[in-house]
Amino acid sequence: MIRTLPNSKTYRIGYSVFVVVYFMFLFAPILIVCLLAFNNSNFPSLPWYGFTLDWFISKGPRRVGVFYHAMNLRAIFTSLRVALGVSVLSTFVGTCAAFLFGQEEFRFKKGLYLLMLAPMVVPGVILGISNLSFANSLGIFLEKNLGIDLRILSPGLPLVVLGQSSFITTFVALVVIAKLKKFDRGLEEAAYNLGANRLQVVWFITLRYLRPSIIGGAVVAFLLSFENFNTTLFLIGSTPTLPIALFAQIRDGGSPVVNAVSFLLVMGMTIFSLVNLYCSRATEHQ
Image (cartoon, rainbow, N blue to C red; front, side, top):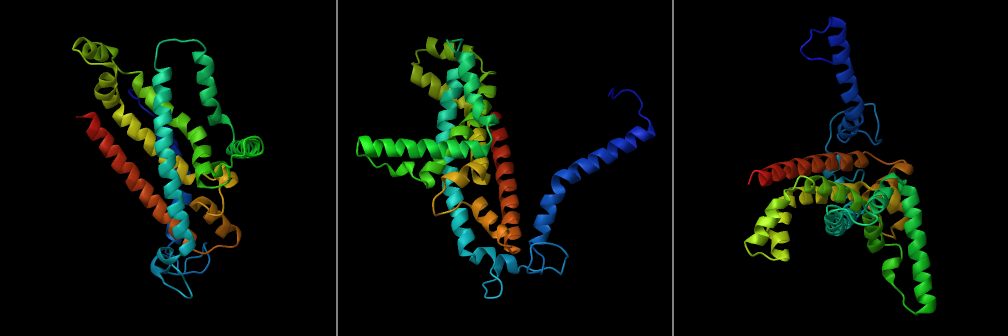
């Protein structure tokens, strides 16, 4: 499309219809779920029976709001713990990987880069099964041959953190690598000429330049971890994360409290993303 050329009326109408339909396709399901969080009905679906806040603040016994729903509160806390752990681990490992692939050409660089990207195209179900099988096999081997019982290899939060980090690390690395490619290596050489050592150069020059992308990568890791279902389902123990808890409730029929949780998540993630965007732009302009 050449913007300087005049467009026909048919084209303008078609273009407008496409934009409206496209964004309705993206956001209509989310808007419906958020709307049903305030529906005065005992079922998480239409029709609309009126406005209510029961699914947020009701203490029971007929209705229990999300702020008094013990199972969902525990699941939210569990997801937060997992997401924070994955963010820290994935950000550290992903940043180190970005430094590795940001260097000059070295042996097997392209092959290793493709291996790093592999978890992105492997289905989450396969990743979950693979991580569980590997952890079980390693745990049995260590227990039988060395007498070592590592609980970290049993289904539970530590294994979930390790399993999610195995593919989320790749996303963080790609975010940091994209920023690192724009880095002017002359800044490092100038710092060396002024007497700085390697650690000082990395800490005060390179990492400071990469700080917005590292923060962005950590946010991406947090969001990907918080909403992950496929991989987590195979690695979690007796304490489910929020996606798994919501799935169990929907499978058993559910109630509008599920919509209330979804509404809070949408609002929370939106605010979280906007704050991160603002902070990243503020950091880049410093």
